[in-house]
Structure formats: structure tokens, C-alpha cells
Amino acid sequence: MSSVQRVGLGANGYGYAGVRTELTTDLRGATALAEGLSIRATGRLLGVDKDTVNHWLSGLGRHGQRVMNRLRRLPQLAPGGVSVG
Image 1 (tube, rainbow, N blue to C red):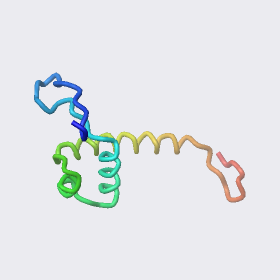
Image 2: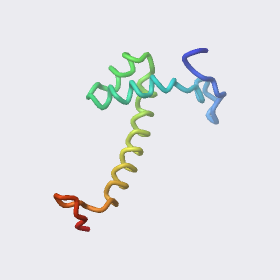
Image 3: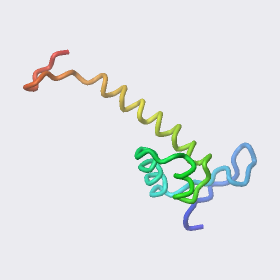
Image 4: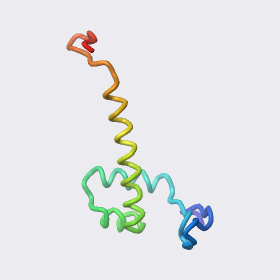
């Protein structure tokens, strides 16, 4: 299995639980979604199930939220580089 890494059966016992996609596939999927491609079209383009793409969306959403929370904590800079907060 060159395109996926088998980790084993998940707790739910499904045969595909624990199968992971390659990092390049994940990155291409994230890029396609960010460009506005639909969930189904992204799945067809990359050869993965739409449920896999939905799983990526939840992870991407959590990551985006963490980034925004950290950016909000940075000091605000006024024009000229002077801290205002």
C-alpha cells in the first residue's frame, strides 16, 4: 500500500478505520477547498471519499480558529510600528 498507511482497525471495527491519506493528498485537498471547490468535487479530484474530505474540514476549521485566537492576542500596531494596545 504505497498511497495509504494502514494503522489498523479503529474502535468502531470498520475495515477502513485507521487508514490515513498521504500528506500531499491532504495538502492538495486543503488547497482545493480553500479555492472554493465543493466537497464532492474535491473527493473526486483526489480519489478520496467525501467523508474523508469532511474530516479534513473539521481539522482545518480547528486549526484556523487557533490561528485567529493567537493573532487576536498580538499587540496592535499603529502606522509607524508603535504599539497601541
